[in-house]
Length: 341
Image (cartoon, rainbow, N blue to C red; front, side, top):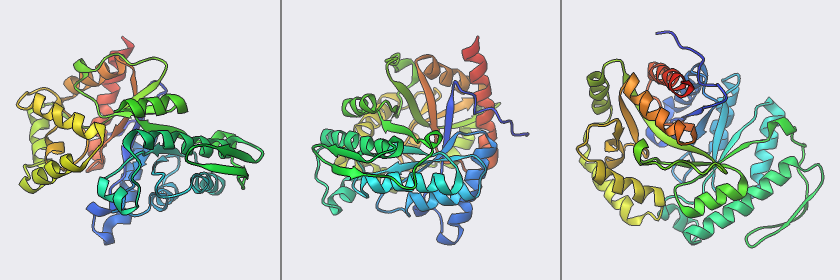
């Protein structure tokens, strides 16, 4: 199968996801990151999500590896305010732009695993974390676009005549993504004019997007010409895991994330149905997003419904192989044909 550069058209933006250090043997991890990044670039993805949490290696170091081993792929760096000052984030964006001339995207993370936040003594309530995120991201943006010193006096952050050097190039200003699964997240996305990313319901349940915001979804895809083959591959990749199910149940009890509760409820409502929308990997704690499974045509039709409702950014799960992204590419080619009709 020949890879086609088809995912970079301006109407739909597609991101892939880099492997997690916790899921790959240390000796193989760097090569795994490089391979997935190159596959993603070959498939025409705009960027690649790099996770962050207490258990993972630093996302900025992973992002530098990605930049050094690709020609144009932009890391989508997960940024958690509990980990670093907004000046440090702006400095990293400015420095990587200065060194490599590569724009970045920032995935602004308000929360995380409750135990991770507790270990950092971050007891900020859910909605307040999003208010903090708005201040945090505003400072980053001002530092990256202002030719002069930046002063900001907010509830959570204060900076006084802070200047960014080396001065960032305007064309390298980062794109901003924010979780849009809760009302607080949507409010933050609106305040920042960011892309609101959510874990979607089945497309027929999704209302049309508010056109004052840019929206996207996070999901995985397993598609083949033959529907039964796609389901066989999906079940082979995500087998039943009793330990994972127990871990998922424990996570449900300790998480205050709106998306986690929404997906868990959706898993109960869609259990046993044979439509493209599939939450089995999420229920077994094997991934954290819904999957669309089926024939190229059926999965493309489901994705086209999301596009028609206003979701134009797609953040895909970690691909197991280069060939899997080629199958995804075929699906998105069909999606573009459908929405152009």
